[in-house]
Each structure stands twice: as structure tokens, then as C-alpha cells.
Length: 126
Image (cartoon, rainbow, N blue to C red; front, side, top):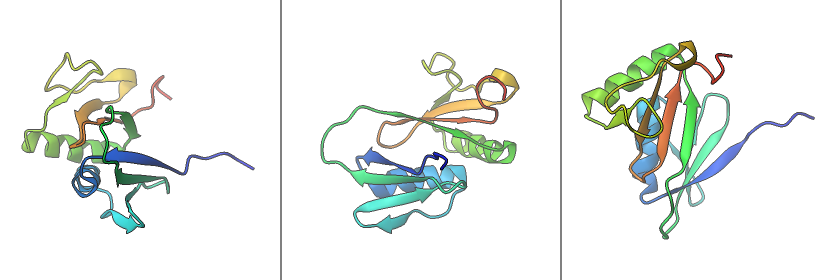
């Protein structure tokens, strides 16, 4: 039996706003309700299950490996909407993207304060 990642629960201040924000930016299907979750399904079958926690939570980091065409559309949406973004995890290169490992990458925050990252090449260039 193999081991594959299936889903994670993402705490949200407003699950509808956060789930739709990510799905729309990444060009994913509309989030779907599942019980008290709002589910964003990725292309590989993994799901991000948004839930309103009702308590304060620290922002988490979520990284997505995307194709070049998805990255192009994502960065166009980010820039077109004036969404703050940066090239590095510390936010020191604001308004830029990176070209690490021969690909491109960008960081941005979602409406709940989570730190999202999109890269076109896995770390290490593989």
C-alpha cells in the first residue's frame, strides 16, 4: 500500500470568503459544501477543507506546485487586484516573484491570514 496525502482542515475566519479566494485565484472548481466544511479540491484529488473555528489561530503556510499557465493567470490576478505579494518567505521583496530552482514562485496571504505560496518547480529543481 502506498501513502498519499488526502486532505487537511484549514481554519478560516470566513470559510466562504477564504475558500472562494483560493479556488478562484488558482483556477480551481467552485468549493463544495461537505457537512460543516467548504471543500476546495485540487487537481490531484487532495482536498482543502475550510472550517470556521471560532477561535484565534496563527497563520499557517500552504504551498502549491502549479503549472506555468496557472502561475501566469495567478500572478495576473494578484497584480490586477492589488493583492500584496512577495518573492520571499520573509516578505522583504514585496511586489516581486522569485526564480528559485529554475522556476517561478510567489507568496501571498489569504483573507484568514494564512501564507500561501505558488511555485512552478519543486524545491531542489526536481
